Length: 86
Image (tube, rainbow, N blue to C red):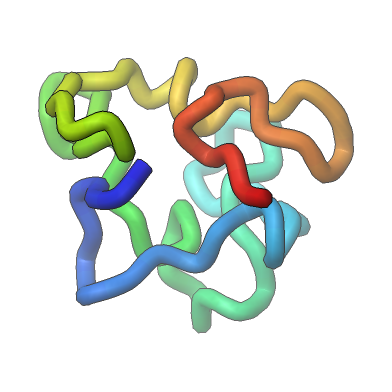
């Protein structure tokens, strides 16, 4: 993922700053302590009909449902390939 809807000019990656808080009250961790209380590490994953527009590294643009983009596959791993980091 190169671009994603955000509140400011960056998003804290959940791969670097793992989720430790539930800011939206759905009983799932969705934010880390570094975001100063702003939900979803400063992203806006629910802005487009409960999804976000992303630009992928291959150049395509896609609307991703919030739950698919923000889903964890383990305590420190994102399920979506768009968070992939090397």
